[in-house]
Length: 398
Ligand code: PLP
Image 1 (cartoon, protein in one colour):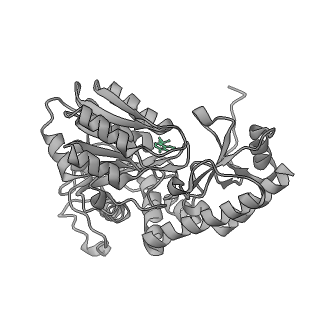
Image 2 (tube, rainbow, N blue to C red):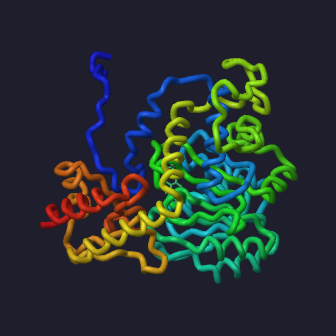
């Protein structure tokens, strides 16, 4: 007992340029520090409606079922799989990095059969192989793939892959954890069916929330399930009963909020059924980060990520450092940088952290020891970050 810490925790100052979390803007931190109110308070429910509307805008979708799952990106992933998949289903799952592998794990834990389409780490999912797998397994219920593979820095062609799913009568589950807000995520245009993301990457809110959007086709599939969703907490139908149906972008003045005579703290505001106690302050933070994205404009945010990537790449190349991924499928927000021969990659990361407070990521799995992963996500995609990273790397690499 006497060895327990008794001081408040003061995190060190960092520049977060790894694979996530990204730097959180002071506006978002300030939003999270506002007074906690009840998760059924009409004012809070009004804010949830705004989060829904702002997420619909960020996902470029009109899907009614759009909200934030209370949990990290992996919870959003699991929500999509456990709701759409039943034991005995067949799922074509694309694996070209760590997170495709995690999707396969989800499929198998749902008692379904995973037909794996494998591509080399550092390359995108090959639509030709996916077409062949869907043709060979005509009953496949779902095609699952990662849009932006954070473990390698690769973008796969989501439009082409969703079109293949539709042509073969399968639903498309798409991981946009690292893409949402950083590069185009066009849910309705793609025809994607169950799409999840994370708060801590290009949205730059703290980790712990997972935006999810579900198409009406997928809602129909949900309604025709033969078995109950095995996860009570992640049951999208129950969550929708809490988040409500419609979305509203503009908040009513406090004195006009439609509480319907329901006072703060009473059980269920109109159209809402208590499910779990929402992480109230975390949602204030996500709301603020989405307001900031809305103020900047989605396309301006995509352009900023591209511009910061171009600046970083130019500086890295001037130092003789190369990128792993071919230009056509390279993510601007996640740069896999090849570690030069003879350089101790872990020592470089340690020095960057110790001397400059700069966090970059290590390679994962097949790329461990071979690459550094430099993130330019959300609030970490600024000229200040690019210059600091280049200067620190130059100093450490000598
Ligand atoms: N999918 C991708 C592509 C990711 O990059 C991550 C996290 O880095 C996840 C899923 C899981 O998200 P979380 O770590 O928030 O659970």
